[in-house]
Length: 138
Image 1 (tube, rainbow, N blue to C red):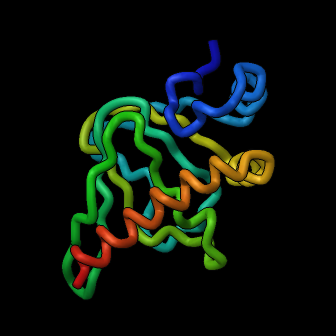
Image 2 (image 1 turned 180 degrees about the horizontal axis):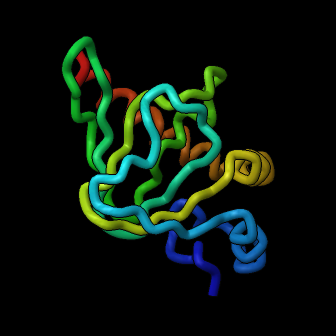
């Protein structure tokens, strides 16, 4: 069974496709209050949170604004991979010890080229988050 078989976003892939894709993914443990990436970092990967919670924040003038929390089985910071600027728009910090799956950018791009329905799912998530973020920032 693939390390990716539990991920709803990839549910349209066959077991063979999941196994091949898993070769380019890595499970990573993050300690409580560890920063996964910072606002303005270059994007090189997308993450799927396997367990626990991560807080997404953005600096606006002198304030840290909490945009949302990412919970188990949600994708984390897919936006920067699909924008020309290719930079993180916020900071991700683990609220507790957690585990996530790291998916390198070239492999997610290759996979979405082969499976446009996956790209559509990701775009829907991005759109929902952009709308939510805009409400919190304004």
